[in-house]
Length: 379
Image 1 (cartoon, helix red, strand yellow):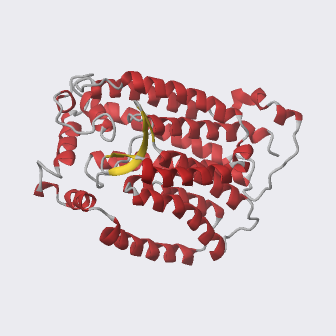
Image 2 (image 1 turned 180 degrees about the vertical axis):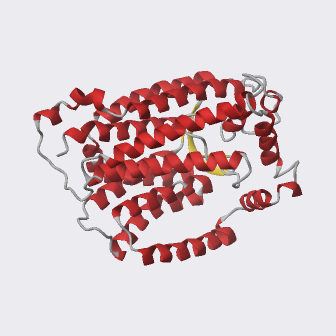
């Protein structure tokens, strides 16, 4: 188990100036899983959007190409430099989240997008990355095994600021992504059991308050429909109903590429974004879904290995924060398409169509690989 209390070293050794000399030693499973998932995503987005007015494959391919460049850039930059810039990035992301409430475009009932011509940008994705880096910087400077209540409250405040701005949009799915980020990093940093119990009580109270005062009627309807989808199968329960049909009809080996009736006949809504896994399940069946989930498991396992062998506290915290968000995306979206969780706008990493989200995933992957690359020099 790595020593997470080890301070950062500012000395620039010859190895530190040439980190690419150790490129062959990084965990290739992470990069392999990311690239293969992106390739599967391109094929599935093409199939899901082939009957739409716009085939989203060319746009998605552009985002993947830009994402690969960002991956290499993020990997080549020392993550400690990113931590030094984290406060600036964090403040900048808060400014963008504030501006989008005034200047943003409304999509899916939420004012969460900047739109310039055919291009869109969602500042909440930048906020996730900046918040992770800033929290990692704050926690890495604490040289004690267990956090005090004041330190925990400070971290909660850091995470709550962008989260509340996203709730105002309102984008409950985007705001929910900050919860695993907060929980994962606090657990690694060290939290007393009684604080966890207090957090559970507070979370329950906040959840009740959001249900009563913070959620729009259509959002409450989604939760009620999740609990009782049969009450409105052609209205608010339509998404869940059609998604279950698509997943179930794929059976063991699926109907074949671009042969799914739910997607090709346009029965399945949001099939190239939130319900991309349902399209894949219908076309490739249980075996196809198992393969994709296996790639996600490889990504998570490789990321966990990188965190365990990172050479300093900040590297561990950065990887854990990014990996916690990734895991939550995969678990929630997978459970959502089979009706285990309410429908929210939580996409599937590397598979769902979306430029900003794709760039976030590749950048996060590059940062994680950068932590692994520099385990030889942060001694």
